[in-house]
Length: 393
Ligand code: ADP
Ligand code: MG
Image (cartoon, rainbow, N blue to C red; front, side, top):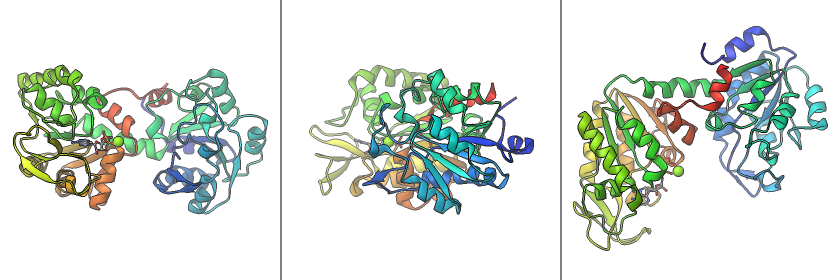
């Protein structure tokens, strides 16, 4: 039962075997240069262990959204030299992730050698989970390792389809560590405190609905707050607000009240007349007409920080305000430092939330920083990730 581990795959013996590793090497590129190699680094533990065990590695990933076409700006080629540098070994590259050339290059690998394949999404069969494309990928390998946590919530050919055609499968180190840490949010030591923020209720509706009855304390921040305030009949000025989500927000508020759980929404706000560096700001309880909420206020930040200090398990996704602008970033910074100071097990997910944590320089004081935004939200909701389910079959 459960997901087969890398340990169990290695114990069976991988020396001389071709192991296809679906990694997440979706790094940001600017003019063909890698601007942040965090994801390459995150994939190293799995690759190092397999190399040491003598496996022949075929590494595959997507990069961006080329939509089924070979577009040079989405090429994974620039990743090969950086991966080589970080692994401390040569990395060969194949211009196509399937076909005769890829098969020949895979067959020519020696024990511990590494071949990086071109962007999987240059073929439309990848995101369509096309069986022929999945079979073509599987032809390259004897075993399959899924380590791309950030894509594990998508049923693609390289995450799901391929598992039907390869004898041995396993979860990589990154995937396993993500699941272990996020499982703590699903099965928490209580009290569980959850902070959800970001721009839109509609982006986070499913996670709100799932975590509201699960968390002992749920605190809302970011632009989502104003839809919740509107649901309570409070004025929101010209804040970002989704009228078509007011009914959903009301249902979540009512359910929280009926269950006796605590749902916190901001009671004071930093407001501005425009979202702009240098804009005049005020701290208010009621948002005046013509002004918009751009951050939670200091009293709200203090209340949230107090609740975080009392938690045994803490999960955070989504900034408390427009943290990209310094004057609107204090609420987000306060939550980040409260998380860093907390005695709870702390888990943070989401691209912007991680950026906020790094901006505060507290990354090493958080128990787990999740690399997969969408996947982490789906997993903590209790959803089954298709890539993980495919490994279990
Ligand atoms: P994550 O990437 O961590 O999942 P989201 O992408 O959901 O977070 O939300 C982050 C975005 O929400 C940021 O760009 C931030 O500027 C925006 N945001 C937060 N609060 C507000 C607000 N009050 N008004 C407008 N935008 C906001
Ligand atoms: Mg984001």
